[in-house]
Image 1 (cartoon, helix red, strand yellow):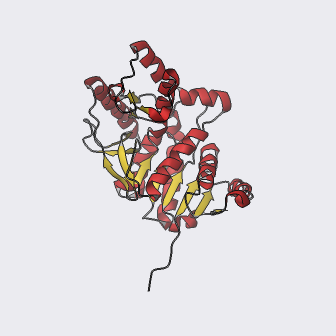
Image 2 (cartoon, helix red, strand yellow):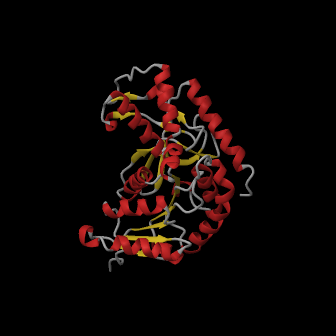
Image 3 (cartoon, one colour):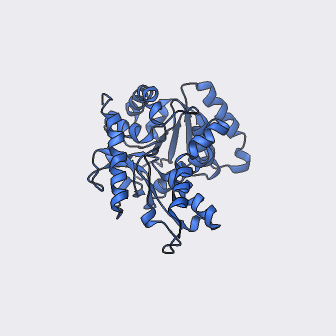
Length: 309
């Protein structure tokens, strides 16, 4: 007798700006048959679920509800966006003190019901909280993934494309390291359509990097929170997992002797498939880029050392 069919289920924990936009994006693209929203404010989750369900006659194909942590039991992917949000003038590291205690509670509730899902972390500071999630959950390192520099790399490509007046999908470029102020632009490998040199001056490179690094601050100052692009970034990661793509994405993962960095979660090119992070790809960095990457790791390690993990 064939085993009973189990539909793919994605759980989104946290129905703030990032969580709801991510859920809505997953719904529109019908990434999975089942989508569950969980929030400490259950009424908020109920309202968001009801609002999205009223659109089912236009999209269909998804069973969506506001649930509890028990609904994590059958989840394939659990996306964590819950936590304090970044305020104007506040860095992602500033959020750590607020969010680490919230995360201890969330991860313990998840693991009470599920030990097989992929945990996709988006709450900031995402690299440190991904590391904390690995330690608290006891999950295999491949199945704890931070959103990393997927969004930063997209911003980088967009700004390069805007400057060159070229579709950003034809721009090849990566941001690695921290999703934050110490992130590293890999200018040595950036190009157009796989091999055409960008031809930027040092001044232009610095301007694009600063605009990439400070993009979130600009958006937060203007409208209070980032939501759309990170929702699309998380959707892209979910697609790579559920479709078993083997896509190369700059997610945050636990590194082991990666350009001189070990025992830290940082954004780096990873092959992402149904197992989670299947492999981390070594980038041939310049000496300057490698030094900056190592400095980014040391910054995060100093913050992790303050935590009792």
